[in-house]
Amino acid sequence: MFDLTGKTAIVTGANTGIGQGIAIALAQAGANIALVGRSDANETAEKIQALGQKTAIIRADLSSIEPCDYVIKEAIEKLGGVDVLVNNAGIIRRNDALDFTEDDWDSVMNTNIKNLFFLSQAAAKVMVENGGGKIINIASMLTFQGGIRVASYTASKSGVGGLTKLLANEWAGKGINVNAIAPGYIATNNTAALQADEKRNSEILGRIPAGRWGDPADLGGAAVFLASDAAQYVQGHVLAVDGGWLAR
Image 1 (cartoon, rainbow, N blue to C red):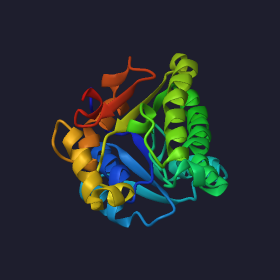
Image 2 (image 1 turned 90 degrees about the horizontal axis):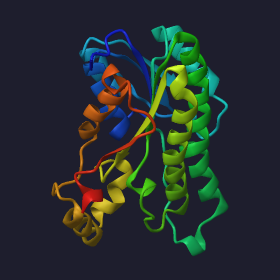
Image 3 (image 1 turned 90 degrees about the vertical axis):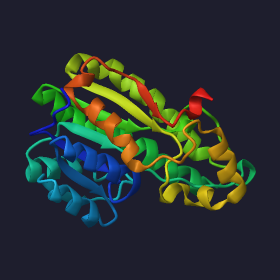
């Protein structure tokens, strides 16, 4: 039920961190992987190829919706199809709400929610023609909580949760499963500032029942599950992978 052999998965923002961890896990389950983003994803590609799976690097700036159709077309041409889409690409801007700028608002919203919707739409059009597929959005603890100093990020990730449910409502009958993963505090470039802040790092660890920051690989099992036939009747769900953070 968890075998992804012969499937093609698109993973955005897969050059490092969470995207890399998910891409490698999907490859371990048998999928071929299209790696999408602005940055060099050669390291991820080499790890996937070492597993015996095919991969393609698709360079695209996901701060706008312009490359959405191109990404899907390239994945089909290079790897033969689009069975799974993982919308992982995202950015964050930090500032007090009183000082937050329009540029910091728009840049985050354009990447984290606007591009996610239109890339999902482009993929879904192909999936409908092919009888179905899986879309996995990357949400956040801030899908459930407010946070501080990350106004646009919180708004975007709250939107990811709602949009996941809406798309599941519209596309479940078309054979497309739309779900999301909400990572807890994962050790990545995006959280480097928090890890380096001794006081904040201590506060965070003190609330995580697992007693540690998560690793990108910790998200792999959830991604494989949601991408596989094992999740065929799972729709519109936001699966927290958080070491128990939300349960505290």
